[in-house]
Length: 322
Image (cartoon, rainbow, N blue to C red; front, top):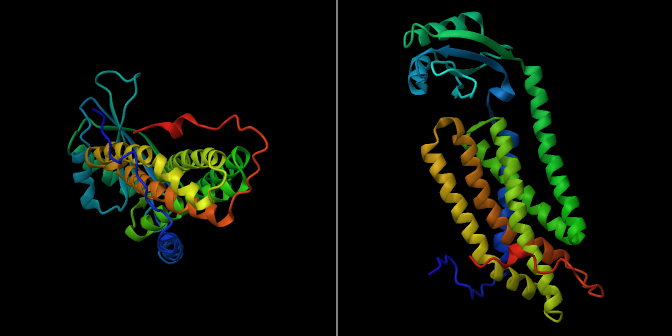
């Protein structure tokens, strides 16, 4: 007996209320842009600058205890992570403590560093601090530019890939869905003021790949059905294709969300922002593959020239019966 989250014979009309679904998406994108422009993002240490303190001790690292003794110092954004390395000895326990720059200064002052070290030594008097490194605002500004460039280049690469694999109308639909996913995710981070750091950039790039995978599966089935049903109009073919791949889409999204929710609940503060961005991306990406990319494709239409045989028809991933 196989688990089916969606019946295999669904016949839903995904374009019945396309003005509401697509219009709602466009409103959400515009609101995200407005909120981002007015409120901005809560940049983490990676983008604002700060100081990293490396600790070393023969006793095990207790991240929660470290956080408890540093909290009364009121230093703002503080990230504490334990470092694991196969080269470490059994009695070598290392942690990295990252503290944001205070009052627009380039780095944390020596007095603040001494206060942090003294607070940590109340837990473990044998604790040593082999390295203290600072990241100034100039380097942080370069990281912002590089991060934006990485996302833009990823979307541009997707545009070129879809254009070569399908037709330009498909590429416009795919890129519209990707831009939709990224902007809404950034907008929610701006509204909720969740810390935005390099891990979130990694999450955005992962979202681009995940959303693209869903979109390509649907588009591949669309291309196959356009050849199979030459007299059906594009709207009917799109509905048929989405229904045929719906079971696979839902099953993939649900299983991915189960893993992400587990990480969000049990993974700790270090990866919680990354996982939250991924959860948003999976939900929004699944929605956009169905209601944004396909709607854009329907708007632009497809030129049907089937004089040549399609050797790529029937992509294996589009035939998965989940």
